Length: 316
Image (tube, rainbow, N blue to C red; front, side):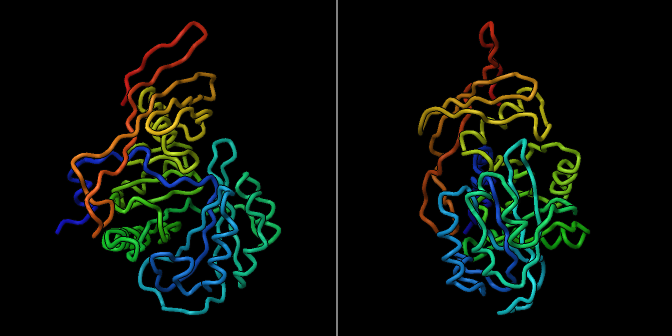
């Protein structure tokens, strides 16, 4: 039986507009096995995991567990854990790092403040500071969510680490199993699907250079899915790869039809029409699930707005 990732690749299912949405990410190191819901089914205290899930609700913060690639000891106790917080909204992109010996300290964080893009609570509570190393390359390897994430994600994470990518981590869940191997890059917040090691290195170099690599990109986690598709369409239409050059400033409408306004730092504006529709033919969203028609985001028009009217650009 074909895996969900192979079927999705064979059908050339579009990647744009499929990234998880989170303006702020909180990453907590937790070695050992991960269950389907890793915060409550790993060696992290499940009471703490449930409390963290409740604490971030409605704040714009998404929590994930991370571990270093490769074989790892099945440790029930961890002396020191790496913790990262990243905000992905253009104009206020940052990545901070801390080390803690007591994960209960995480409950002292002001998650609403983190979701608004303020790092003060993270630094004060955990003695954190700006991350000065390489960008983080987070590869989903949670096989308990879907086997494709383990079969395809773990070899990619291991290859990245073996080739000297210091920011390589395995991560619990990024959504979109059928796009495995899936990747999230921080601090930029852009997600990628069907990732390969050479392409990941190009993406990471782009982050260092202040560029967005759009090939294989699922979108920025800073935006809801219509905005993700709209931003990538504008970048493609005008050839813009500056990481902070464009941003979504307005999304109007509701499924299955949206009008998204995308702005450039030079003052240009675009109105992008995004339509949600079912994927065809039917395919499984996850290995072992029933056949279905996953929603896809299709950009049908990109119009550059000006004081004298609107000039049409081809949708890509």
